[in-house]
Image (cartoon, rainbow, N blue to C red; front, side):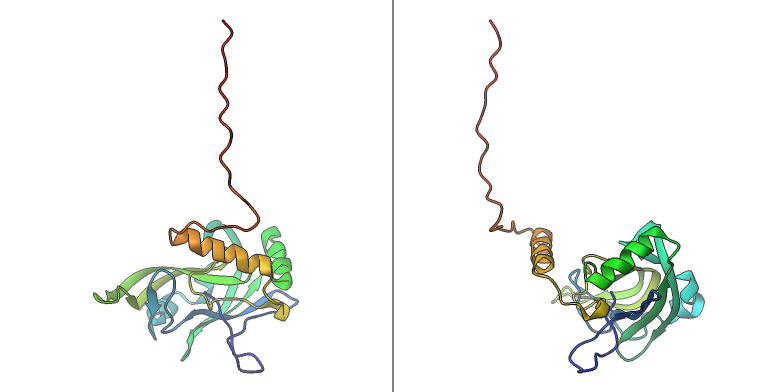
Length: 197
C-alpha cells in the first residue's frame, strides 16, 4: 500500500518517483479500510521497524519473493501511516521495466505483505483492526487492496483502460460477473463429429 505525501494543492496523498529510481510514499495508511476488511492502527509497525530496519524489508514486485526490484532506504511511522522511501535498482531488468511503467502510469499500486501479531475483529462490522504486524515486504503491485495506496509517477492521469480493468478485477473478486460492452459472449454452436461407418 503506497500513497504519498500531500500534493502541492493539498487534495490527496501523492507518491513520487524520481529520474534516478527513488520512490517515496506511504506504504500503509492508518485508519483506512482495505478491500480485505483490514484496518492498520497507529504504531502497528513500531516493533518490526525497531527489530528489522528498512534494509531487512524487501522491495518486491507483486509480492513475489523471486522478484526483488530495489531496496528501502527509510521506513518510519508518522501520524498518517508508514512512510517509505526506497530506490529501484537499475541493474535489475524488472526494476527498469517498472520504472518505465511508473513513469507512464501503467502501474501505480503499493501493498504490504505481513503477518498479524495482534489484531481484533469487530463482531458487528467484521473489520479486523491490526495493532501489531510483522512486516515481511512492501511490493509495487497492479491492484492494491488499499485503494489509496498508489504511486503517481510524473503526475500522469489514470487511463480509461486502467479504470475499466480495475473495475472488472474488483467485480470478479466480489463474485459478480462483469458485463463487458466490448466482448459479447454467445454460446458456441454444438458440433457433433460423425464417425465413419
